[in-house]
Image 1 (cartoon, one colour):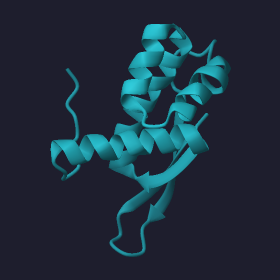
Image 2 (cartoon, helix red, strand yellow):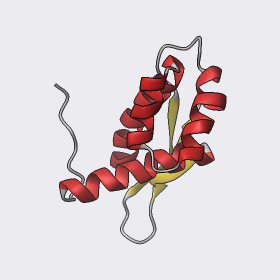
Image 3 (tube, helix red, strand yellow):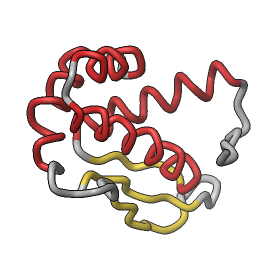
Image 4 (spheres, helix red, strand yellow):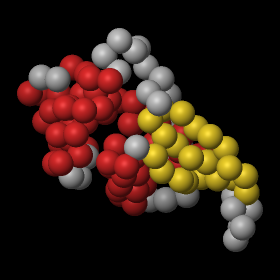
Length: 113
């Protein structure tokens, strides 16, 4: 099994943060975050798009159990997933921006392809 990054957070904080990042990514199409957060967010976002491609009721309920906003789930199943119907993975792209001014942490833009 692939090892999860802990991101310096407790389990509850980490899962809530990742759920928020995935929800924002699917709602807006792109987010700006650090490299490690983007890599973890990418894992879950790709799983959500795969659920959207399945399109059945069980997949919709699984997505609703992870994504906070029902309108984002509707957008995922109705608009986002059909765009990737012929694509097998690789739904996101990471673009490096450079270091953050405050602490020098490497920043990226995570966006849907």
